[in-house]
Amino acid sequence: MTGAAIVIGLIAVFCGAVLQRISGIGVGLVAAPVFTLLVGPQLGVFVTNTATIISGLLIGLAVLSEVDWKRFGFLVGFAVLGSWPAALLVRDADPAILTIFIGSIVLIALMTTFSAPRLPQVSSSALTAATGITASFLNTAAGVSAPAMVIYARVSRWPQRSFAATMQPTFMMLAIMSVVTKLIAGVGAVGNLPPWWFFAVLIAAVIGGVAVGSAAAQRVSAAGARRMAVVLVSLGAFAAVVRGIILL
Image: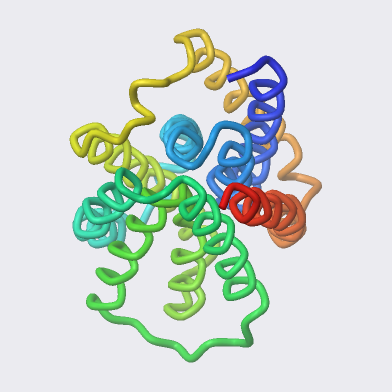
């Protein structure tokens, strides 16, 4: 990973942490397409998962009292069913195809999540379980689980405050599953990790983003933060698709 790639990647993580502190989502959406562009899909998603573990832990500590632990248990309990097949996909897929897949998934998810009309209300344990499986698959394969969670929140009419809080430990656990399953599956990127100090700086970027997001939360609405995320993520995801096509 070059010096320029490290700087750009850390800026993406910082921006994602700011947005996640304000709206509940952001790190994976912003960082995944950027790191995929910079270092390829396998390593890019692996680094994104690492950043998500850190951000979920740090933000989650501040909102523990508002977490819906029952829903968290359902989502995470079924998530392992989606993580394993995704880890095998990441291990065996052609890098160019995987890059296109990641960029396309992010673009489709954005359109579905933020452009869809009001959805009918549905609330069931089966829907929660299916969401956990889908989100885990997307998180392990593409580094993004937020779109599936946002759609679930809209369909189930989950209050924003509880949703944003519950997502933090959920994102953290999904990212841990992603890292563990890919380590066990033998994903090649594990042998090409950045030096140890990169992860120390990554932690600092997340901490800085969370701090700035906490201050900005008083002035920027969650809806405004999500709109900003859409712009940033769309650019990165589109660029990832183009890069994948060129690699073909």
